[in-house]
Length: 224
Image (cartoon, rainbow, N blue to C red; front, side, top):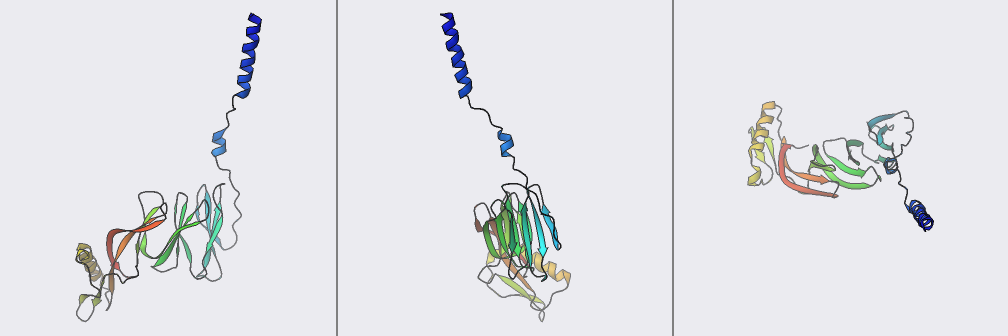
């Protein structure tokens, strides 16, 4: 009887061992494999590089046009190129797995956001000015935009040495910041007839939500 009991227990142990799933090396599987980078060609310069990708700027013969080449260093990151038929493409920000570029060389530029994982264009906006502010979370930036309507503004009239309004300005925008800007430009001493100062709204450029929305905050500055 003891012998039979021993055989049954032994068989159960063998079956249990065979049916127990083997643990996989999940840590090893989660680490993205490295991807070899191509050698830099003549006319190419590195604009950005981290452990995930390298971004190369290639200038063509026409100095107004160029090409940004995003080159993956790890699996899971896309390799792609960005170029424009009539605008210079500039790298602005790399934030986590998002890429932000601007089109143009002046003070007013269009902005485009791309996913570094897929190469997909996620969000774009026209006529951004005064730079880009980094937001409180990854994928969020703040910008100032020209709208379709003429923004509130004033200009310097040289004949009378005074500021004149060229649009109707809401009372809430006639604030201390405007007065500070007027004094600052007067202090610099390079005012010319028609010199403009305008007021633009601050916008939230949210790549995560694929949305551009007004914040209700405004800023007075030189009209570019």
